Structures are given as structure tokens and as C-alpha cells.
Image (cartoon, rainbow over all chains, first blue to last red; front, side, top):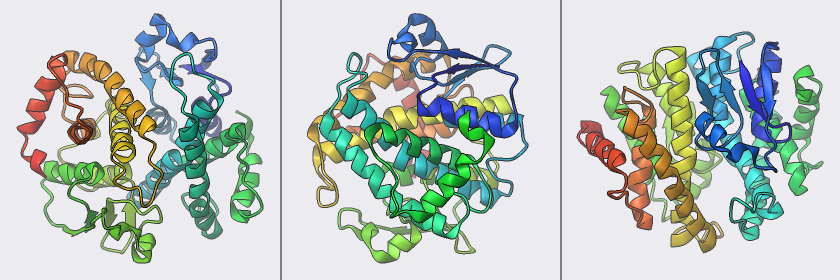
Length: 203
Length: 203
């Protein structure tokens, strides 16, 4: 397998952490410099017409993109430990939380970065006001996560899951727009410390 | 089962169409008037802390929210016909396309509506410029979908899948911001006609 990667972007990190949790090391990475627009080439358009990383290229040449699709495929391919749950209901609750933190934390953090920093202004139209609004949307989600983590060890319940991976990638990435989760969220802080202790955190 | 529903919003429609495709009729709906803010009550906050529809309440009282989590749970519960694919690779490709059209079409259409119309301005800060940008993002996704549908009968390949449901709900909803898929996209038009012929379309 080959992972089209970027070391700083949150979505490729989701895949790398998931692979580390599975103990999968037999893959190569190809680093794309997004600042230089290496993902905008015609060659890469053939790999992913949406020009985004990560992409997972399989042995037969199929190029899978979209992080949730890659992560679920890897979970099915390397089933231990299961990161999408086991019973039907457990899977549904993990799916729900994974989607909640993707829309409620990760995308707002990414919009915040893109629209406040203007880092990609050669290829998009940054709107600072939307960036600020997105940062506020991110903040508005934190009390919901705090409530959940005050009653559960992990984001989707009693087991570490893909929802923890999405959440930690979002929260860490939000530092780039100067958002830090403070002492008013003790359960999130407790959880974040626990995630940091896992060997996969540095992946 | 009980579906907290809104007849005009695209996400509840995704669930209703999926249920219709499965031939599932044994559920009740509770309609929430979003304009009147019926989803903002403290009662509904207990059902979904993110205050969104759809929510699927199961017989044991568990309230599932987030459309993709609901749809996948229903697909597992009512497996025929399979709408998330059968082989591991087929499932991954369907996941990829479902996520592509959710991010590339449905969310831009919803942002367009929310930020241009100001319909929810009592509870959010509409930014017309972001609404226009979102409409443009929607338009930018259409050539990618056209290319895919010029080579495949359905969005994710040779079988109707959940990705078709997400895509048609997005494209139909975009009419509210005056976006119509025109003659420059003959494959999308051919596909849309085929989706309209299915009994589930009116769900």
C-alpha cells in the first residue's frame, strides 16, 4: 500500500494514527507539499480528482480517497483491534460520534485555518469572517464533547475508536488558529492526556 | 422506530429514501418545524445535543443522530437490497463517493441556503459572501460527478447505493439557491432522470 501524505494536515494524520493503532507498518508514503501545490498537478488529478490528501493506493492500483472511506477500509482489512465497534449498535454510536466531531470540530478547524491564514489564497477565496465564525462553531461544539467525556472514558463510549482519532486530530489542528482547550473542559483535558499516552499519537 | 423528521430538509430525506428503498414502512415520524425552532427546545436537546434532524429513536430508547450513522445502521438492520456494497472494495468505493458528494455537494448547498437566505438568522450569523462561495464550490464539484456518471450508471458504480441518495438530495436541495444542473451535464441529467423513476424518490 502507498499513502499519499502530508505531515502537517489533519486528515492524513487520521489515517496514520489508525494504521499505528492496528500495528500496520507495511506501507510506503509519498509526501506532497501542499503549500507548493504538489497536489494540484495533472498527475495527482488522476489519483484523486478532488486533489486532496490522503489517498491510499492499493496493490491493484485502486486509489481510495476520503479519509472516512480509507479508515473504514483499513479497519475491515486489519480487524484488530476493532476501531469501528463490534455490535451493530456500538458501530452506530461510533459512527454518530465520528461524524459529529468531523463536522463539529475538524471541518470548522480546517475552515478556520484556510480562511484566516490565507495559506491557500492562490487556489481559493479566503473569507476571514467565515474563518472566525468557524472558530466559534468549533468552540460551540466543545461543551457537547465535554459532556460526553464526563460520562464516558472515550469519545464514543468505553472503547477507544475512530471517533477519538478524528477528535484528537481536530483539537490538535485547531492550535494553528490559536484555539486551545482550557481548564473549563476538564474531561476533554483528561481524555487528551490519555490519547497522548498512546504510541499511535506521534504517527 | 421513530424518525424525528422535517419534510423540507435534505438530511431527513436521505433517511426516508433509504427506508423506502428497503421497503421499510414500520416507523412513525414526528415532524419538527425548524423555522419555528421546534428543534431548539430543551426536550429536543435531550434527544440530540446538536439540535439537528434527523434522529432515529430505536425501540430501546436509543436516539441515533447524524444521517450517515442512521443510514448505515438501517442498512445493517434491513440488509436487502444492500446500499453500502458487498465486497470490501465495493464498500470502500461507495463510502468514498458518499463522502465526496456529502462534502462537495450537500454541505455547500446547505451553506448556500443558510448563508444566502438568512432563514436561520435568529440562531446563526449568515455571511452572504460565504453563501455565494459555497454555491460556487457546489458548481465546482459538478464536472467531477459528470465525469464519474459518464462512465458509470450510478454514482459509485454499477449499483444504486447510498451515494446516489446523498447526491440526489443535494442536487434537489440546491434548487432553493437557484442552482440547476443544466444541459452541460448530460450524464448527471440522465442519472437524475433514472433516480426520479424510482418509487423511493418521493419519500
